[in-house]
Image (cartoon, rainbow, N blue to C red; front, side, top):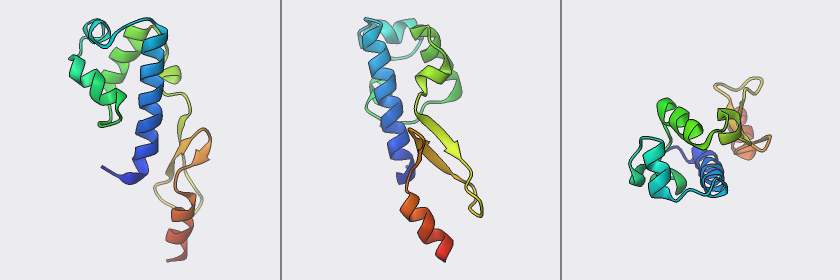
Length: 105
């Protein structure tokens, strides 16, 4: 796993578990509703794996929320002179100090 993705996965995990709890679902009931295995929900809520696109769609549908809300606070920014860009958490570039070091090379 790319260490740069860890904050992104942690934010997604927080969003998912928070929305699930707010909806009043336990993991078992929620997993059944989303057509996923309970362990898959657990792994996502513990930020151990990145979800696939179809999994994101299933999760959002089961929660009756948009993908935007499920992924709230997560983004991507292309930085001038740096390819391919970098992940954002709450509008802040993850690893900005690392990016500056890469540009100096």
